[in-house]
Image (cartoon, rainbow, N blue to C red; front, side, top):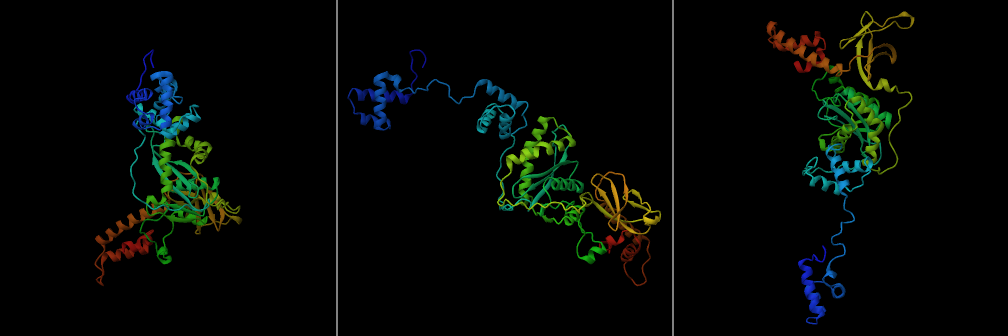
Length: 449
């Protein structure tokens, strides 16, 4: 209402006329109620209102008033300012949470969404329909299955180079039990993640993963020993899982490990925005933030209660040397000069008890996760060396190098070898020479022959 004028709708005008006719006994109140589409009791109430107040009695008491739940203009302006500046990379729900926790502005998620859309802020990502995949039931208890994977991404924002986030999630609760930033998804990265999981929770019964070459042998190179054994040697990570008694399970599709894939979808949305807001832009600071704050905060929001409260995480036995177990393992012969040469590294082996040397024996060489080296003979530590850069497992590099050398040698023998007197193929003779004399030739003998 403004001054002596009354704002009334067309429906109100019609009701006023009908009720005036009822007051003047030109129609019955029951007939007026039927035409207005209201109950007789409501018609009586309205008739009394216009008797006392006239047409004003048909106007709702809240007409012209601001809604009780209307957002104040200064609050609206503050929300839109934060949305476009400090929290520009946050999705609607995440932004709503930050408003409550950091800015002490309590609003509903739908209210925030409407405010952002009205101001022209588009949703962070579009929703799309997905193909049907059957749901895999969760494991009933914690520690029964760990899902892990790596996700290369620009985790510290578009202005910084990409890196890889390694993540492990418990299948029963969706709790994050390990997060580690690394340069790339590699054997070293998976061992760092496994160490983080063991230190935080313990040893799981099984691990569900994809067919990454750091986790599963995907090549068709078989050494003579592997052919005789009927199986390929595991990867370095696969060997560690076997030593710790962890069952390794390969997923056939990304959807099969959908919970860890969904985790990365959430992290790429939320964690990137949080790191940018906190000013974190390097791997070391990022890992410290993950350990000290983010993992616990994420689990508080997203973890669920397990079906069975009994945990199956296993503690590390006191007799297990975790540093030795979580390492790269190689076998090498100690030379006559009591030195081991492996992957461009030379390790001098000091004299043993009684001043005896170790020349000619096969030793076990371990590179620890910090890059340092240890040499064991009959499970006894006999030598150590300073740290060097950790690269792909030396076994893989030697296999590739040996395959290339064997292939080149095959072509040399084909070109230079005379035709055998028995009429056999020169290529087969060359392959035989490689099997007998070539370094590492037995690894590739079946492929060349």
